[in-house]
Image (cartoon, rainbow, N blue to C red; front, side, top):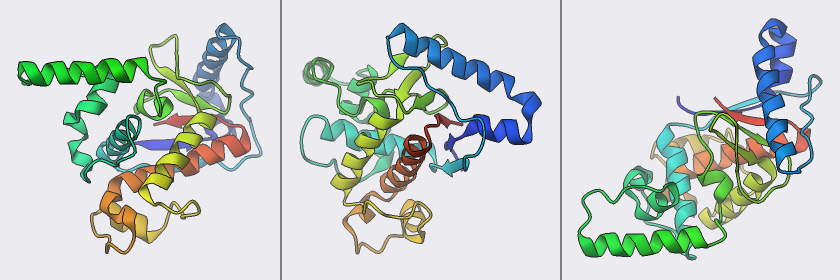
Amino acid sequence: MGIKAEVGVLAALLAAQPDNAAYTEAELEAVNAVLEAHELPAHREPRSRMPVLVLDLGPAVALQGLRRVAAHLAVGPRLPQPGAGQAAADPLLLARYGGQDGGQDGGQRRRLGLRRRRVQEAARPFAHLIEHSEIGGYYVPVDFPHPLPGADGERLGSSRELLSELDALGAALGLPDDVDPDADALWEGLDGEGDGSEPWHAYGAEAFACARLRAAARHSVGYGAALAFR
């Protein structure tokens, strides 16, 4: 479908394709170099004896829609209007990305600029979700408050902090904490076929991404393994 979250990538390679594991091992060594540079504990990636988890997060719009929800909750208690497809033009999310003003008039630019400054001056809530790339990079189960710049330009995130952010987003969406990431209701919501019996059905794509990425973050924390986007 789209973006995938994988936990246990090194263990999977060593079990099935050991000759192809050197590149991933080098990436994880680079991760530890970043952690060491910030005086953080090293990450010890499991090499075997763990269940590998690969979860499809749906099309890119689902994750972007979840980031849009996070950007709004970062500055106030209200959810944005439903519509994951609005993320690409959402001013609060663009502010977190350092987005451009596009065709805004002068007054709109000033208001958007003010919102940007307020977001940048704040404590950057939901930073591990919003500021991490969806096309590469790692999350590791080490605690640090904001994503760290990696040597290759990608951000290094904390799966512990990511899990905390996703728990908060799930609660805001009304998504059950124990929802099965493979539940039919999630797939139906992703396709816009939710029956409206639950509050999160209005945010079907966002809930899908939240539930499945949350499951991956829990797996990362539980097994002490890195989470990677593929």
